[in-house]
Image (cartoon, chains in turn cyan, orange):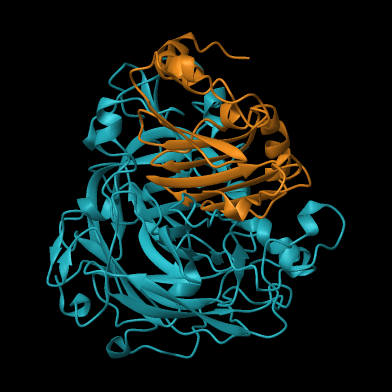
Length: 424
Length: 151
C-alpha cells in the first residue's frame, strides 16, 4: 500500500488530489534530458523503448517515488485488446498482474494441475493479492509476447481468499486503491514468480491453488511454464533483460518525472553494455551492501520501493506527531538539512564500489512532488558482531534517479556477465 | 466461512511439521527440542549466549527462522530469512492480531513494513523470492540485552 505513506507526508495534498480530475497526468519531464549518451533521462523512441513516469498514479493514490508505465493486453490470438495505464514498474517482482477492477477483457482462467481454476495468493510484505491466472498477449512499446500467464487480482470469479493467504501479510490488496496501481509489471531478473520450487513443492503459506468452485480451493503444484511469467522473457526479441533510465531529480523533488524502459541488453544499438558496474544477484534476488561497517547481504535494488530503507541510528528520525498512528512518520528520517551518505556494493571479485545517496527530511515534501530523492526510512536491524539475518539495505526508486540501471535475467549472457545481475 | 477441506489437506503436511518444529511463538515458551528430534524435514540448531538461547530452524521451503528465548524459556524475538514469508500467524502467535491491526495503519509498501508499538516491534522486508523479518517484544528483552546486539 504505497499510498499510505503519502497522506501523512503531504497533509492537504491528498484532499486536493481528490478534488481535481487528474492527480497523476501530465508529461512534463524533468530537466529535459533526452540524451541516451549520458545514460539518464529518456532515450530516443524505438520499438524496444517504453515510456515510464514517476507520477502520482491512479486518481486518489497520490503515490511518491513510484514508477508507472502503460501496457496493452489482448485476448490471445485476437485483436481484442485493452491498453492500461498506471501499471507499476517493479524490479522486485516477476510477472504481470492486473487489477480486475480496470480490466474489460473477458479472459478464461487457466487450469490447475490439481484440477479447477489456477488461482494465486501473491504475498507481498505489507499485504496479499488474490486472483486467478489467465493468458494474455502482451504488447509494450513494439515488443510482444503471446499467451503470457498473468494474474488477475481481485477477480469476482474467486471472491474469497483462503485464510492461509493472510498469514504472511495481513491486508488484502485487491483493489486499485489498496494496491496503488492498475497493475504491476514485475520485470526483475527472474523468469517466474516462484520457479522450480512450486513445480515440486507446496510452500507455506501456499502460493498457488486449484479452485474447483469459486470458494473451494486446494493447494497445487504448478509447472514452471504455467506460473505467472516475467513477460520480458517471453518477448520474441530483446528478451534477456531490461534497462531503466531516469533523469536526476533535485533535492526539493519534482513532479511527473519521465524516463524510459528499454528492453534487451546488448541486443540493439540503444541497449549496449559499456563500462558499467556489474553487481551479482543471489538466487533470492539480493545484493550485498556495506554500510557503517556492516555487511548487509540481503540488500536489494528495487524500482518498486518508494524510498531508501536502511538502519542508521545516528540520523534524526521524524517526530511522532499528529493523531493516530497513520499521521506519524517516525519510521522515516528527518534530518534538518539534506545529507549525503556513502555505502558500498560488493562485486563478484569481492572488490567494492562506493555509492553515495541522499537523505532529506520526509517532513518537507512539497504537495506537488511525486519524485523525492531524499526520502529514506528506517529498518530495525540485528547487527551483532556475528553474521546475522535481517542484514538489509533497500535501495528503492531514489537509486534510479540520474542513471541507467540494467537487470539481466537469470541465465542470460551479455557482454558483461551472465544474469542474474544488476549493472549501473 | 467457506469450506476449504481440500486445501487444508494439501497443507497439512507442512502445517504439522511446523507445529512440531515451532510450537512456540513470540511471547510463548521456546521450541521443544524433544519434539524437534522427531522431525526429518527441518534442521535445528541451538546455541546459547549467556542471557538468551537461539533455536534456529530451517523449514522445507528454505526459510530459516530463529527464535530467541530468555533464560525463563520465553521467546522474546524471532527472525526469518528465505524465499518465502513464514506463517506469521504462527510465528507471532498471540501478537499477530496486534501486528495486523497496526500494519493497516503503518506506512507499508510491498517491500517494507514496520510496526512499532511499546510492546511489539515487527519489521518485514524483501521481495518476491527473498524475504526477511524481525519481530521482538521490547518489554521482554532479557536484562542487559539490546536487540541490536543479538547474534
